[in-house]
Every structure is written in C-alpha cells, then in structure tokens.
Length: 84
Image (cartoon, rainbow, N blue to C red):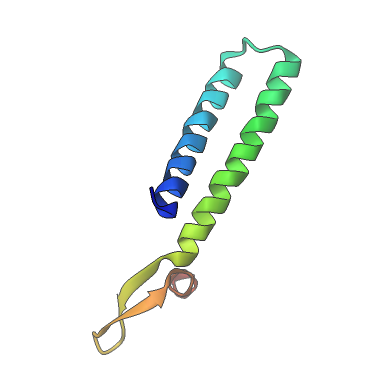
C-alpha cells in the first residue's frame, strides 16, 4: 500500500471515528467525565482531519484560463485569492 493510500485510509478512519464520537455526545447517555473525554478525542480528530485537508489543498493545482483563453496550471491558493 502506498503512502497516499495509507494517508487516505487514515483520514477516512479518523473521519469515521469522529462521526462515532459526535453520535455518542449527541446521545446524551455519557457521564460528564466520559463526555469530556469524548470531546477531547473529537478535537484531536478534527485537528488531524483539518491538517490532512490543508496538506491536500496545498497540493491541488487547477487548470485555469488566462485572458487569452490559454489553459495553464495555477496553485489552488492563487485561484482562491483572485476570487476574493
């Protein structure tokens, strides 16, 4: 399995675990201590997923047309800044 596949799998697993944590918290069946522990775990998972998404975003390049209609590669961040 390649590193890309492993990262994708880890991201997917983290996201699934985060969904379970949210379900547990929303159920209202956890004690205060367990809710706090679940919340802390959820924050860690959110940070991990956010980090992975940021890494991917930095790698994305989009094809965009310049004023003459020619296609060229442009980093994702540059495209986002132009739209602001």
